Image (tube, rainbow, N blue to C red; front, top):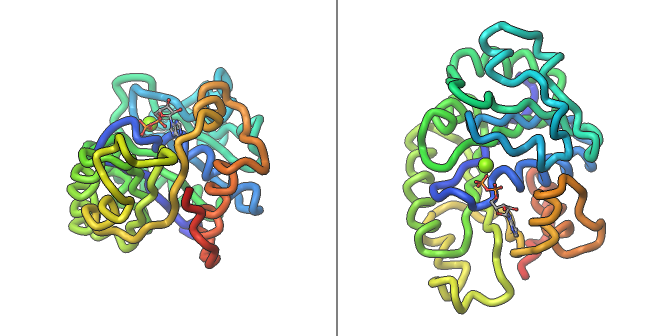
Length: 243
Ligand SMILES: Nc1ncnc2c1ncn2[C@@H]1O[C@H](COP(=O)(O)OP(=O)(O)O)[C@@H](O)[C@H]1O
Ligand SMILES: [Mg+2]
């Protein structure tokens, strides 16, 4: 498999995994990478909406893994983000078998540069399936004590599962932390025990982009923060954009 496979995980739900999976995928694609975003959160589809491809994902990952359709038919390019391809999770009843996922990714690997795996919160099936194939994990955390504590548990599971590279991505970070229950972002980093790859601000623009499937403005702070993370994912050494 030649593509780099990055799983997106969290302990707590709603930290922004799916939103950042799409927006980071879009940034990587804007840097010239061919990106495949695989949604593993069975029954809770969202990346098609966030990527502006609602109604276009006729077939899903379950159809491909269980041999009901060719992979090529289930992959949909985002109409908003050129070179970002998606495959949706099954609506219901889907079970992602790790061995079948591996075979699918081995086939897709030579066609893409980066494969992003959007998992579900916690360490259930989507997490375990992704852990078997990912070379890197992004742990998405909001700056609060619960997300940090849960993040620590997931970080330990990633280490125990042999994930070679775990990075912390802080999301929904407000301008001041006074109502967050943490005094400094370092508290989150120390609790989780993983290296920081980026800080994404709390942003109504990100909410809107996700809810409406439309892009961020090119020069706004959210976009700059995402661009910095994408550059770091590509191995570039760029300063962290922190608030
Ligand atoms: N940086 C952000 N600023 C504001 N809202 C955000 C941000 N990131 C995500 N959200 C919002 O948080 C909610 C949960 O995001 P989602 O990506 O579905 O989380 P998850 O996949 O982790 O469950 C959505 O309404 C989304 O628009
Ligand atoms: Mg999600």
